[in-house]
Amino acid sequence: MLHIGIDDTDSIKGGCTTWLATEIIAELSEFDLIGPPRLVRLNPNVPWKTRGNAAVALTFGKGVGSKTLVGEFGKEKIYMYTTGRDMEYDKHAMLERISTLVMDGSMSDSQPGIVISDVFLPEGLYWQGVTNIVTE
Image (cartoon, rainbow, N blue to C red):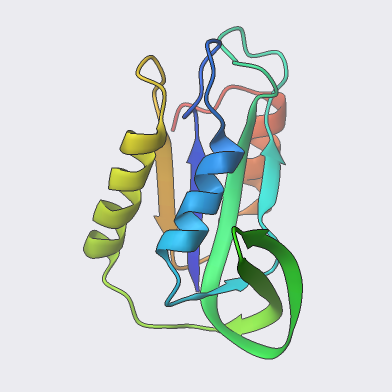
């Protein structure tokens, strides 16, 4: 599977990380969305947070089984699958595609971060992000 996480694309002045997630879904139309897009809550006590202090996580692959409508972009319906299988992709090319979208869609005073992985990251890392400041 292709797992993508993005954060810090907005600022106090505006912008929206969740909006940017919709742009990534549209860009990766050759992949199926596996599971719903996830809003990942982070430590609410971080002094430099913008508003809600959340990241977005998306999983892509080849959908298996029935699909569920999760939204629309204009007139195009967006579906997700609860299960999927891996699809081949070039990590460097994917990072380039996503980086371009993130940089173009981020506020100029933000410091965007991108994670691209072919495995789920450990749950413990999530809890570190909720309760602490993760530096590595």
